[in-house]
Amino acid sequence: MTESVDRQTAVLRLRAAQDILILCHKNPDGDTIGCAGALYLALKALGKNVAVLCSDPIPSMYDFMGIGWFDASFTPAFVVAVDVAGIQLFGDRNNVQKYAEHVDLCIDHHPSNSGYAYETLLDPGAAAASEIMIDVVTDMGVELTPEIAACLYTGIATDTGCFRFSNTTAKTHMAAAKVIEAGADIENLNARLFESRSRARLEIEKMALESLEYFFDGLCAMIYLTWDQIVTSGVPGAELEDLTSLPRSIEGVEVGLTLRQQKDGSFKISVRTAGRVDACAIARHLGGGGHSRAAGCEISGNLDNARYAILDEVRKELERWGMIDHADRNQG
Image (cartoon, rainbow, N blue to C red; front, side, top):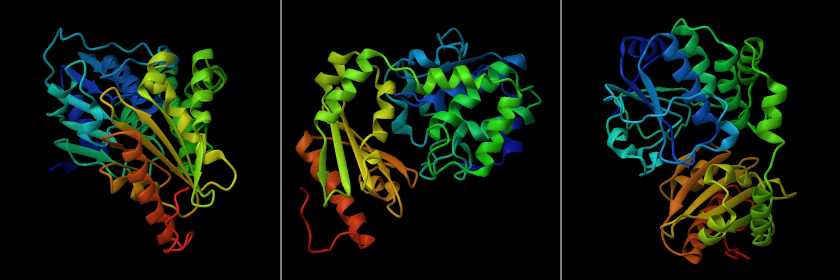
């Protein structure tokens, strides 16, 4: 079981460490990569030997960060995980599991964090782990350079949907102001992160929308992609993450579901909600977790199994809030 630590303790651990390995979660998004990039640059500024490792390839939209990737040229003596809520989220490629089983420090913002690390710095009120990392970097005595600021802005902006999601707080805006003052080029960053899509990405979005279905009198919308569609498109898994906002953006929809088949046939399910509906409560009953408005889980079996399992949990949550009648079991 993990020991919860405060920021000062986490900073002491990082400053005392050498030969440091930073781990990201699989299908990396802007927050896990942004945290890793900022921490990597900060530790390098302190003269540390440090590298970053991820199970999956990093989307090209994040390749501006100047991260040094782990090539096994040193034996890690201290392992840090950033924005990773559970050990199953590390993935199983690039020998990540060897290090994921012995994480010394986890820096995270997910309330569902499983406590897999020896020590955990957790702030569930933060919109992004990068919001926490701003204070970690400055407390380490490292200047917020424009390069570090760009990494941190990326994490904050992507995890808040460019400050549109309900997890955005006054503290989030103040954190963003810090990195903007430090030199983050938000015009170019926003264009790169939110205004640029490849043709392949648009084609797979079209495929996903062709699968669109409504349930529970339109309160729930679902899209899905098969593994064959994902492979054929050539779009990296991490670049598919923003598809998860599509079903929820439809007028009248309280629960948006995105099902993406994995190579082994299982389905990764993303849950996005509005109002009182708790996305984490839906995902948690299926072994997943996350936040109240954004959560996820993985389900083995075919598409029918995955659909039935997640829709049953959605039904329970909608019943709990009186949005549908207990007698109404219709899922179509």
